[in-house]
Length: 353
Image (tube, rainbow, N blue to C red):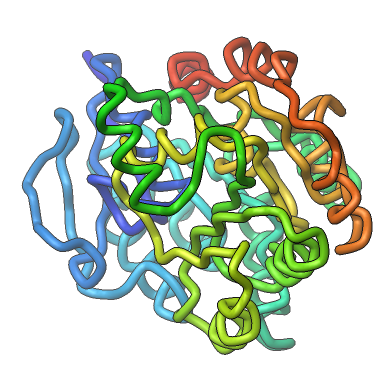
C-alpha cells in the first residue's frame, strides 16, 4: 500500500516560479506515494481537485509574506490525521510543530530552505521569529533536509543535529524547440546568439541585483535580466536607474519554459548573484546548458558548482569577468546531469519517507 504524504509550505501546483513549487511539481510525478499538496486559494489561478495524481487541498490565505505563518499552521492542522508522512517546505509554520507532534503520529520531514532569517528583506522581529521557527523545525522534525553542504554544516554547528543533503533538480528546463521559434524569441528580446549575458532571480538585495547591473553598465556588455522589478522599492529604484542603458534589458517574469529555454541556451553566460544560503534552483538550472557561469562568491554557490564556475565579489570583479572571451563550461553541465536530475532527487526524498 502506498504511503500517504502531505506536502505543506508552497503556493501549490501547477508551479510557476519558485524552487519549492518546482520541487513539488516534480516530486509528485511518481507512482510510489499517495501525495496530497496543500495550496493557497489566494495565489493559485485555478482550483484543481487533483494534479499529476496528487490530491490538492486549499487554504484561504496567501503562502508568502507574513501570511505564510498562519497559512502553514492551518495546513498542518488539516494534515494532523490521515497521513503517514508530512513534508514541510520551509520553517514559517514550524512554531506549531510541538503541538503537531503531540497530536499526530505522522513522520515529520522538514526542508529548512536557505536560512530565511538572514535575508535583508525581514525586520528585526521577523528575523527573530524565523530563527525561532528554524530551531523548532530542527528539534521537532523526525528528519531534516538541507539543500546544500553549507546548510548541513550550519545545522550541525548551530544545533548539533544531523541533516540529509538533498538539492534540487533542474533538468525540467530542457525543452524541445525548433529553429524558427528560437529565432522569433531572440528577435523579440533584441539579442543574438552568444552575444548577451542572462540573469534570472527575485529582485531582492541579497541577490545582488545592483552589483550585476552596475557591472553590466560598467562593461557595456549586453544583459537580459528577468525578475519581479515592481514588487519592491529596491526593484523599482533599480529599474528607474538602469533602464536608460541601451545594453541592459530589464524584463518582467517569463513563465513560458520554451521561451526561457531559448534565452538560456543561446546566452554567452549566466550571472548568479545570490548570496543567501542554500542551493538555488536557478543556478542548478543554468548548469544544464553548458555555458559559463559567473556566481557570487559564497560557500553555497561554490558547493553547488563544485568550484567549477567563475566567481565575483563586487561590481568591479564582475565587470572584469564580463570582458573575458566567451567559452562553454561542460564540467558544470556534467555535474548537473550527474547530481541534479529530478529522478535522482525524487528517489532521495521518497527513500526518507
